[in-house]
Length: 253
Image (tube, rainbow, N blue to C red):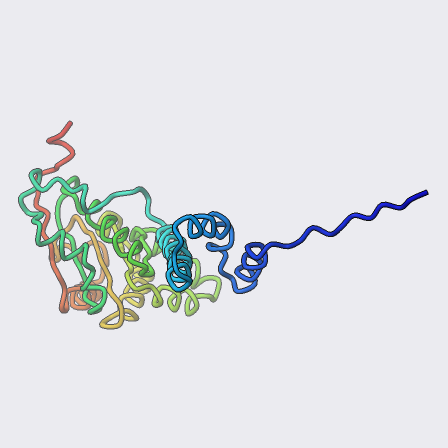
């Protein structure tokens, strides 16, 4: 009886290269390598050009993954872009304001941004849009409402994990606190929030949206001296943006 032997399948150069890509953690390039090689052969590109194109694919994929990760980490409640702001609806929101939030230099300079105005005037839209723009540019961002942050800090304090949580919030390039002034904070919660703001003062950017003027922040922080200290922290070197009193949502129903 004649034995038949099966010859091992030869491994192609492309397969070897793809395996090397995976070992080098070039996970974006590996699955695209086969098609890229065929395309390069058809176009008869030089070896340096092929290498440059291959590495650019890996860089582009890594950039997109990082962008998606940063946007996910920001925990935005909904998608709002600065490009989607209707400049005709609110005369207080100017192209200069949009450009400042879009470029994000206030983040690089560790400068606060304070958005003040009545409900429906676009504060949250601007805040979320600034967060999205920053995250898409690779910055670490965290959006949270004032009430949510106060509750998280109180729970962390009760669980003896406050220092860890404060340190985590200190690592974000931008901390965006929405709806300050909507909920009255007890003394302890107000002090914990003040601790977060103090931790970030001149070290990292904070953006705050509030429906109350500074003169009424004592209603949120209960202690007038603490309210004054918070206003002092949040307004030093700050970009203060007034969004007005006329509700955009009511006018567009």
